[in-house]
Amino acid sequence: MDFQKLSFTIAVLCIALLAQIAAGAEPLYHTCTTYKNFTANRDYDRNLNILLNDLYYNTPASGYKYISVSGKKSKNDSVYGSALCRGDISKADCQICVFEAAKVIRQICPYHIAANIWYDYCSLEYSNFNDFGYPLSTGYFIRSEFRVSSPLSSLAQIQKFLYGLSDEASASKNLFAKGIIEIEGHLLLYVYGLVQCPLDLTPANCSTCIKGRIDDLSDLFDGKGAQFVSATCNVRYEFYPFFKP
Ligand SMILES: *[C@@H]1O[C@H](CO)[C@@H](O)[C@H](O)[C@H]1NC(C)=O
Ligand SMILES: *[C@@H]1O[C@H](CO)[C@@H](O)[C@H](O)[C@H]1NC(C)=O
Ligand SMILES: *[C@@H]1O[C@H](CO)[C@@H](O)[C@H](O)[C@H]1NC(C)=O
Image (cartoon, rainbow, N blue to C red; front, side, top):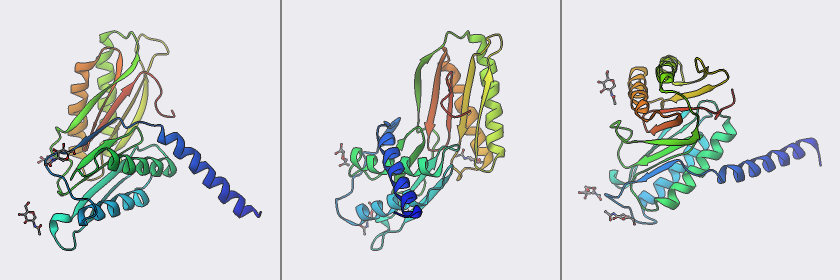
């Protein structure tokens, strides 16, 4: 076996292994719209498969991809979709996550005309309308299981830290920022924060979405981490490292 073949085999084995690990990752949340369903094996079904396949191949690492597939016979069969990978993961992790999301969304929302799914590393959505992602209200709060006995006085510091990440993200080219701070008066107690928007948002809209959610998250503050996922922005803070520092 020559070296090229060997390294190819190793790469394939690695992807298979990673796919198994990723396959174990449960979706954080999903929604299947129920107002309309499509028919199996008709144009919408086919176009949706084309779209999901395209997202898998074309979503860049730490990036965002929007794709539409036009209905040939009827505009009603057009599908619009997007995928967003977390800003700090590799191309391989991004592809594995989008692959899994595309597979699972078809299993749990089989003939639903529109759906969203969120994972730790990526999110994916599709719809028969070109206006998904709005309004901002379609999002979900997820509480962390991990709790620290942190006094409420840390709240202001954590909010300020997340506001800072929001400014950093909206000034960055991929609308993403993450960071770590040590809680004042608590030696070695750290907060890990991450914020991100899909690239179809303007920096101003991104900042509005993130800052609004930071204010909402503070209602939940009780020493547990929390995250907000939506089609317009993701905000997360935890008291343990959920990303590589
Ligand atoms: C679409 O399918 C789901 C699940 O099978 C069902 O709950 C829902 O009522 C259907 N919607 C319509 C409009 O038929
Ligand atoms: C497209 O959808 C609209 C609204 O549901 C319907 O009135 C129209 O007949 C559909 N067109 C085709 C070609 O199916
Ligand atoms: C984005 O920002 C513009 C200008 O501030 C505003 O008019 C628009 O409503 C915002 N869109 C969303 C979805 O927040």
